[in-house]
Image (cartoon, rainbow, N blue to C red; front, side, top):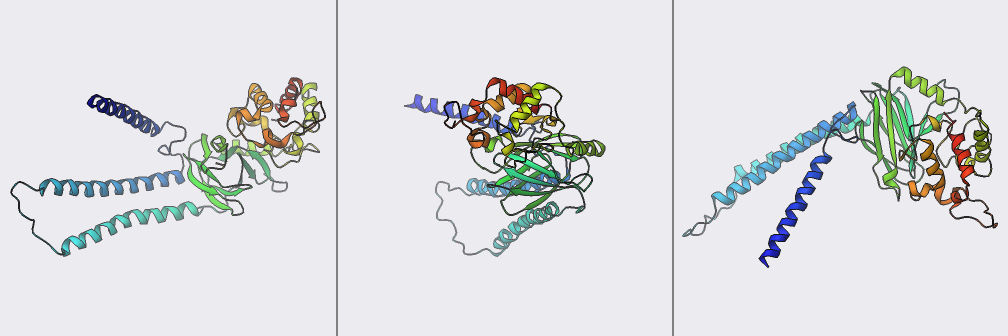
Length: 363
Ligand code: CUA
């Protein structure tokens, strides 16, 4: 029996050590999604607030547990002790334990409220505004057209912003609740259908920053990632100008075959827009006009390589379970005249090659 208890204690010790190491490792600022390595004023103000509340909590913990331990040890019952003196009321003590928590609450409340207002109100209302639209399970980003005449410039999953500038963000969802979160740049703001929330972001250092949906939104919630690409103003302007252009016709025959499939048998056009194509006006999936210019596909799941694009088209469900393309997009008659429930399986290798070849020309 004692041996069993010893064993259990040892197992518990090992489990707790592993948990502690995992917890400490999770705090490393070198992690791509660490909130301790901030690159912008919004995330920084939230980190400062975290430290205020953390140290207030440390003060409360040390004071309460310290007093408790001191009193338990100092006034413990000793052999031969009679009943302790019976006391009713103690004015100085009662004042102390009313005033002290009030001070602690004020220390927490004042910076909390000022941070909330600072983060809610953009310091530059006239700055670039990007509309973020959340979908199950990817992000759509809509920019004002660079020459203000045309339609919005629409892209997906990679949010380009000019560095060292305020960027205003409006948040909307077309299906369920999501939450927009770029840990190093700004904390979470809920994305609510039919209720546009707003926030502002700013990155101080050029670079690529990871983001993620932070509200459970269905089976592929964990695969709903995004990247923020902060770049110097000129680079950003050049990028936006390129994104505003329509797609050009591919030069090689295989890609042209892919284009015909895209607008024909493979039915890609019914869910995806490629500006410049007549039929491709679908709004269900990401805008693919410049998909080849993105570093990743499938909402940050895969690097945008020829191989991965193939995998994605052939079996989207394996990459992102439950996604619409796998579920119900490409429904057309198979060889027996029936409807295939997993339609991408009915794309032949040659068809996939042609589609991949076409998609890779959309730079
Ligand atoms: Cu979108 Cu979780």
